Image (cartoon, rainbow, N blue to C red; front, top):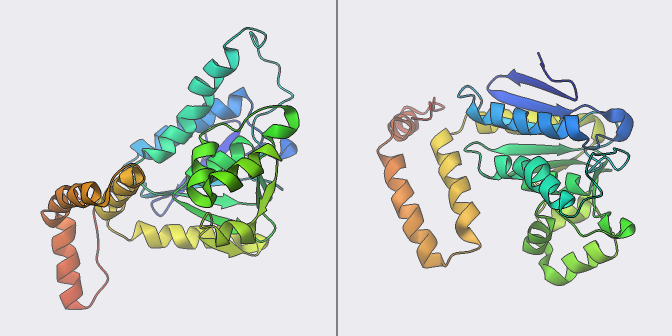
Length: 263
């Protein structure tokens, strides 16, 4: 049951499903949805019963980015947009990137503007066959935000990222898959089902292993192989000393699925 107005929130089988629910505007982010999405991400992150989080969009599109029709008080003041991004948009991305559990984006239709950042910030992306990422900022005289410059550059290189941003280009699902941005491409009618299947599989994995691997990967681009190897060595000690490792070894020799508890 959701206590939110602009999104739906539910937990099933250790999976939290956050659904942006403004289909009439292709789930564009007005103030209400921005605030509720920050709250929903924090709620999922703090809920120890939740092992995996899915972010989806109701209706015909995943997320159309910021709601450009919304009139905000103080928007004519210098520095307003910086403050808005800093306190209303960026915490959504930060909450996903720093979460100790994996996030899956289930992308239908357009993930445009900040919606593209939202999709790429997730650890896994499942896309409908007709879905696409769209850097629409240049068409209205803006630059990409929500960390999109960094995320696109990591995947497709700075030259292609600059072209996509400067020319407000789209990347279709197949192109996203080839670039490593998408883990699965599925028929649109099977999108949520496939995302749930992936989530349930991840929910059976060791939470410690998922958490620590996410932490290492977050540091990998800015560190050397030797530095990452040392970081892995330190974190591996926690894994080896955990009850999950003992359970995993026992299950291996007993030829049964392990029952991980995240401890």
